Image (cartoon, rainbow, N blue to C red; front, side, top):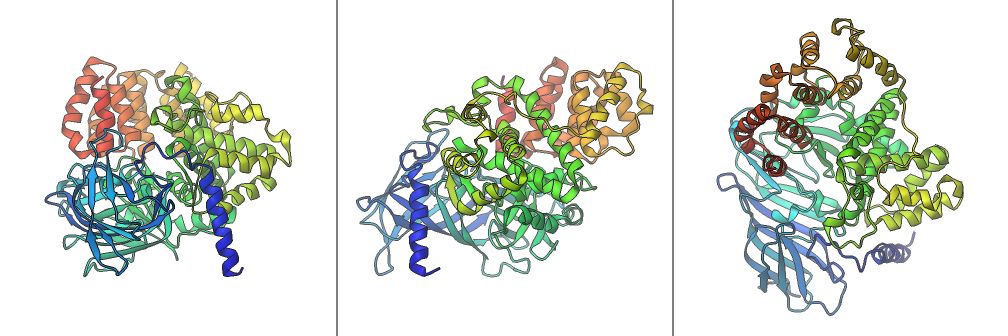
Length: 617
């Protein structure tokens, strides 16, 4: 294609993309990206573990859309600004005036930079606060070796502003480069190209050539080793964990190939992973080129690699095609959850994928009882003016995936797979809204076969509560067979010693423990523990479900192992429900409060906030 044709096509794509939300700016950002957009970022920062700060400067390359605008509005949180400069036509940096608004609890502080005309670059000199919610600074004793400190970031959804002054919204994408100074003996990695052979002499240097939104800006600093897994895949981890991580993630290269066979080329160069200390608050974060992972997925038998499949799937759904604001969160996570199942099926067969899917759907249905009806939709019809109008984040994963699976089942894969790949191809490196997807759905699938889904049912999936009655549930033959065993065990018709679990997969243990929760007695939980060592299992998904059931049943013998778990694991998916379960009884509550007092400093700020709310109820 000729260069002029390419430019016209790019311009048309930008206008199409922008028109969908030109008058619905992200309510969680102060940025006026209808006036000016960041197109590139350069960071030059120094990490100080004593002060727990990053300090230096950020250069923002700007594209002015409104020719009358002369103010740059940025998002910040707890940043100390020392100076801001603009680059003039001759390339010289000149000081400019700026103001910081009062702190908003949810959004942080708006930074208003008054500019002479419309400069192409602005440089902001600043340092972060020790309490920056995006950054967790770990002491040596909180690491595996106990020799060196560790720091890692978690920017999603709007915490990037606490370590970079930026237009902190998924509606704005930019490329970036960085130079990071760190103490000797520590390696720096970022969501960019990471050279395993780099030494850090002269600073650790990075380039991210593909445009990303701010929530995918990520950094990690610590005592790290690297292992190559395949031609374009690798893993970083603490030295004491690298061997286990290398074993657990051995199938990653094959996963990338499996995903490509379904949805087109992987467009990010390398796919590396960083296994973080246990305080990492979530299962994984899909930072491009360097997925961040919880060590709780290392089970020793590769039984929890669905987490890797999920984070890899984000390379198409979320990272490549991104929700324009957090109201449209399901476009990231619902799509990714659907793609995860398809990758698992491609890699490990239909039965494994169906077991995972059935568990996912059962747990989604069980969660509805605790959610207000208004929060059970994929999104609301309310204008995108406040996060108060957003729906439940957790339900968006399985419900969004269930919606796409319903379309797939009715259209057939021969039609649906090209349809979904076309969505990724046509919207690559763009930020999108639900309205844009619905328009694409109508034009490229429903127009050819309107019987796939009526307008009324489409509205029910998007805006209605719960799961529509028309949804077809996944049924695994192995899990169906397990139902009878579970019922007979609960009734006492099958003794614990008679349970034939030798061939059980992790999914079967998870379903079994889900189904006996709040039904089995303390005595029965004790029998299970003695027979199968569940309190000491290396599979954290199984352990979590056993601990939860044990607390509900009043099985106190689990306490030593539960205490060890809560003191060493900071993943919110596990610790928040466990503390919640422990609050039900006075004796358990005292036990929980004692543990939390000792464990709190080990948890990420996000986890602390979630547990604090529970403890203060």
